Length: 349
Image 1 (cartoon, rainbow, N blue to C red):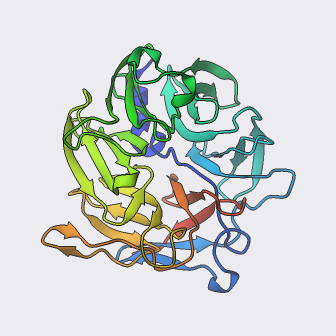
Image 2 (image 1 turned 90 degrees about the vertical axis):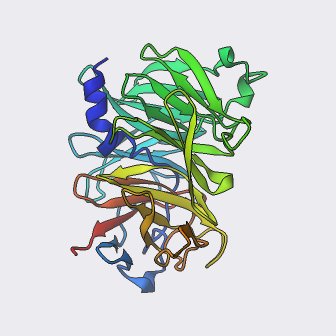
């Protein structure tokens, strides 16, 4: 395994692990009369591309639990519809191919480059497993529950939601829909340790839904969403809690890097247009929010962000995002009426 290759793609692609179903803009998730709505503030603005990626009944989606772009520009969508778990698009939203019928709980979707080859990591919460596959769907390895951890009475208690890549060639796997442990695996794919879960003194996790290893500095901190607590918690590679990013009122799903900024999609917000209308925050290098997409600009009082809430109905349970090589954003959504992803194009500053 070539850890340098893994590191190269960690920032731009593998964390674009995004996840979940889609919505409708003229057939996606926005009302038709809204048109190509512009979202964001200041220099951080994107506009909706109406009707991107909408397909016919022969290629259905249910909950779309991840999106990835490979080096050749293709965009892969992961859905838990077992007619076609993986749908392959070009940037314009044209269907290029599809595969997979065996993942009823398809959820996490991560890209890695190993020995010069692109591979996927897929988690399945229903099958209580995670997998490494080739980009054509061939299963290269399957992991069952981490029995050595001693945290589970049986396989059914392990419900993994996402895989993050470690710069040492290993993996971190979060059990967001199970017991909220983060499990560390070495470069051979063997279980090493775990942290989070019900640990005391704030080191716990509650719905450890998404994770990412930040290689933008030498600390290589592990970021994990503690969705039920409205927080992101940052740990050392050995599982020691370092600090907490408060995201008052919002439910963070994943962590997606964008240069020295970080994008956070939220499944819901507690106020605004209702629970199902989440939004996306952009964090600056100091980890404070600099803009929101589909929500008002953030307000900080005494260094603490005030309650966050969506102010539009553009998104329906936005769950995961992909940022492609042209700085477009693809929003995949959960429980949104079996609709396809929303594409957002960058608005020049």
